[in-house]
Image 1 (cartoon, rainbow over the protein chains, first blue to last red):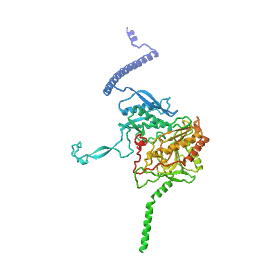
Image 2: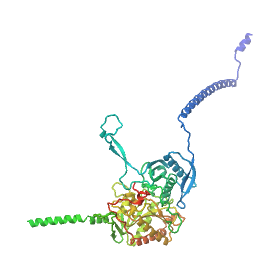
Image 3: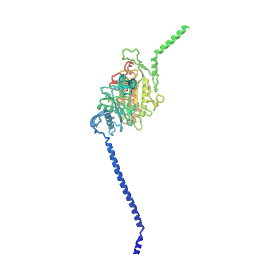
Image 4: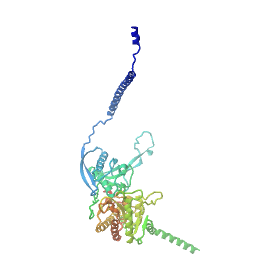
Length: 272
Length: 295
């Protein structure tokens, strides 16, 4: 028995192969438990991120507009230019326009100029946003002068300031006989602020530049007849020409009797 | 001694009176002598004062007549310098075509006895304003207006279409030229003459068998010119875009234009000079359509 115990207490002679297996199994156990820990940690992290994202979306929901968009598609007329014959042709489209007039003008022009950026356009223009902003001014354009308040007028403050020193602004019509005048009551002047990124890529040429401007003017006149005159800015500044030819300093009437006297390319007698 | 003093005073008084009576002559001489950018001398330019008409009832100070140098033509080769204009083809830019056409036209006109004023005769011209860099569009208009020319031709080029495109201003015609015309609409008083000039050139080009397109456009700085003004846009002769560089084609166009201007020199008439009492631009087109408004 002693011998047996003594014999049994001694480790059985083992081969090197067996010890390597035992060592690998120990490392595998370590890796296994590490992976378990990582999986649990990722699960916790995922749950925490999910919870945080849900809170963020719920916070965004509070900033959503209360009223659902009400813009409906309307029938508009686009005056589409063609470089082939140098003409404009009206074409009706169904597009959704916002209610505010400024936004309507911008949306209309965005739609018109985006059409010209299509690959098969008859009047190829660069893609991308073209109109930064549209401003509408009632005609006639009036100025404002600072004038002292009339005696007895309430200055709007209780500070006890000297009424003579309190000045207000009053609209005055221009004394210039060439001042912008409306053709119809309610006529407006649209100031279209173009983006230089679009203007700088516009094709150069008398006809192609004139067609672009006439297309804009014709489209505005067809859909918003109260806009009688248009001025153009580029990045908020005046600019002499669109791409070296068409005048951007002048004020354009939207309804011009001779708007389309630019002839086509047909050889032969003059088109006028 | 008194007699000597009296004679000196009388001489001084006479000199003063002569000085006061001569400003118109000085003004005419100054206007005729103000130097354009580049002149090709043909025959001596003769100016023709046109009768002035005051639309006010009675005006003691009659406005000065509008001068026209019938044998002076202004050529404005568009673009130049850093402004290349349109890229017509891989090897052709607009500024080179306009300058080449201007040189041919200048030679033709000089041979016919015209004095030709060119706003540029090289790639880029310096502005007459010191330190202003290249010639601006307003500088070009100033050069042209100082010449009191019988015709001002703004030369452009385009790769689209064929033949020659003629454009005149989109401004509505004004009944006359005010004493101080608005810069951006100065052409309004000259619209009738520009229209007649367009017809003359159109007839000549059509007779020469050159395809022609006419129209109206707002091209800077045409609306600031105080002379019969047109945009002459050269397009290719045929389907080949580079055909506009052909010498024979440009010669044909220049010959037709020069011939038309020879006829035109005897027809041109200055617009009426409105008195200063009259509204500067009080014509229907100015306020109604907005085409002639001064921003």
